[in-house]
Length: 516
Image (cartoon, rainbow, N blue to C red):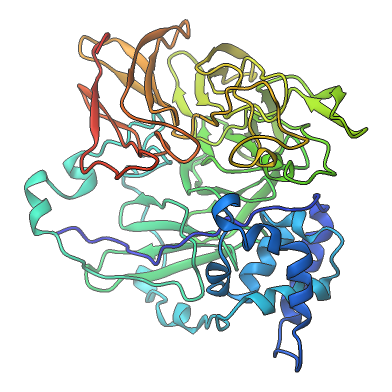
């Protein structure tokens, strides 16, 4: 029987329709705003005018903008909306709004009640289960389970065999009141599950699951900003066992896995608009943290001069959190031409790193995939697979899978807009799924990656050349291969979505042997 942590699942992905606010100011006022959400005033709600002026263009046109609908917003707690506006993806939306106006619009949109946290204390572990026992080898150490990202568990790690699948049933469920987004994967070590719940109160929960009928909470860590990453686990050189998460403000937090106390929090962003999406990985004396960005959203504003940021990979000292090196996907942007309204278009920009790196200790490298370009001209490291040196962050090789793929939200579903390139393939086919360091039959190593184009790539880890590629389905901005590629001794397993069609019932394996 599989004893599984099940959680309520929904999505928050609020679209940006204005220019960015300073994160520092937002963080300082977020708590003040949250406390101002109270009973609805009599007469026309003051939040209605704020919504119509600053939000309705996107959220009342959800099919075109991909923003959450009003119905979705209504299910969010007021504090959740406030958090998104002040420390999350909606920072641009808060530009020019007073804390009172943010409070008004949060309360106007929400129809949810304030979450009651008494359940946490009721689930606290007894003394004999309060401290995580972490002597076992982790079953899930990072987003790809191990540092090679192979997403492949043995019977001993998973606790189930194929013959058990038909007999599985739900053992227990934990619900998180007031939470509508469960975007983060847990780290699993022994009988402890370390689960980020990245909205509203921005928490990491440590659950003990040694009692198959009754899990309990060992500790809870709470941060200031929206958590975006999955939980990473590692053991530092001083023997301390740690959990790592990244947040919307591009901060990496290292937490003591035994008691939930923060050891350090360090900003790793390359730009003001940087965010953390990929799971941090502890490698020796460094924490490896890819950097993505939300400028793709800000480009929707006609007054915003796009685009000036790009992605990369940052190494932090595992003991102190201090920055050791930065690996950039491209050079800094410069003004390149007038958009036609007297404002400048900037470039190159883009190539955010959304995915968690695979680590190659033998070659002293890490491998990531990058996203599309956000402005002219598409840099050679956009929609690319890249190898960075673990010692200094230098680029060892780069392979571009799709050329001239320029896209941002300002383009809309059909192109156009002041910040949108007129000369682009306009595909938005990032590498969203994490790379995998795999070994094919016969011992040949390769870097395997899935692209939103619907293509699985296998690369030579030494040279960055193509060993084979297999197209397994229709791709696109909302289709193709996003997450969850896995390998075993002979095959790559790649989930594929088909825009406009049903998702197939089975995963389509691509053989690890070259040419197939």
